[in-house]
Amino acid sequence: MATDHPQSAPGTAAAAAPGRAHGTRPRVLSGIQPTAGSFHLGNYLGAVRQWVALQESHDAFYMVVDLHAITVPQDPAELRANTRLAASQLLAAGLDPDRCTLFVQSHVPEHAQLAWVMNCLTGFGEASRMTQFKDKSAKQGADRTSVGLFTYPILQVADILLYQADQVPVGEDQRQHVELTRDLAERFNGRFGRTFTLPAAYIVRETAKIYDLQDPAAKMSKSAATPKGVISLLDDPRATAKKIRGAVTDTDTVIRFDRETKPGVSNLLTIYSTLTKEPVADIERKYEGKGYGALKTDLSEIVVDFVTPFRERTQEYLDDPETLDGILAKGAEKARAIAAETLERTYERVGFLTAKH
Ligand code: TRP
Picture 1 (cartoon, protein in one colour):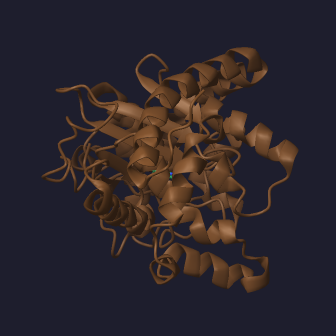
Picture 2 (cartoon, helix red, strand yellow):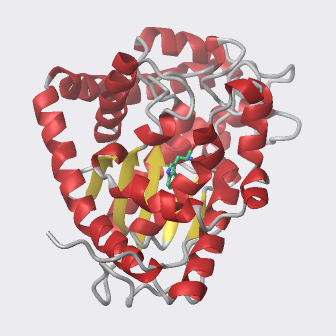
């Protein structure tokens, strides 16, 4: 997988960290908020597909971050439904509970517990410099911004440090939060003795970025101006085919990858290439002398062939919540074994009196 951090940063070998046997595969951890409803193709090709690949080579932990979701108001019934929906889609996309640990953040109480310790280690000014918080709070206004949103990055720090993760697959917008994680881990280790692994961000390169079909200058996002530009994986496949046929291209008719002058066509080529694994150059050659219509027709078919089974598998999990909840319970149990060990060690280092049971 193309990233700018193929290996973990030097000096982060985690053999001595709690919960880690010597010589195990590098550990990755990531989270997704249960607020999106249907995943869109950008989520899938940019992040989820990478999560699926990493479970083959890494000791992978993935969670649905419901604690993060309530940093902005959520309807309780919707939050619960969206948590199951997110987990179902992750499983439908190919996460295998036998090869990774998939769980719901609130099922592991150590996240909130470690976050408190990390809150107390973070400077107010330091937290105030988090750009995502600044953007979000500016949009909402101070009165509607919760203190939870302010400490959101610190909860994320706790998520990562609890598992001694080596690498954190995230989008570019999360790089600062991973940097904060490294800073706080170093600060804690310096003050209390080596306790936490320093993680590295694992960021997908530009080539895996998917843009809006109607506005190829903008990333595909659920907050797009029009749903016509967004391929929602759980939509009716016929609607999806229509969106691809209606995608914005440009006035010449040459099928060539060029982000600068031909962003619409380039985006279609990226989608084509990532779903079929054919190199872009081969696709360009295949469509030499053909128009955009041919490319769009074929791409619609490729995308429909992808979303159709994805929708079916997602629906199977949603129709069987007992099985789904069972998978999540097992995941939480595996996660908790590690998280509890890290938390216990942290509490001891901080100077809390050991609780006798
Ligand atoms: N903040 C991340 C996002 O919005 C989600 C997240 C929460 C996360 N905890 C995490 C990602 C831990 C990586 C690791 O995308």
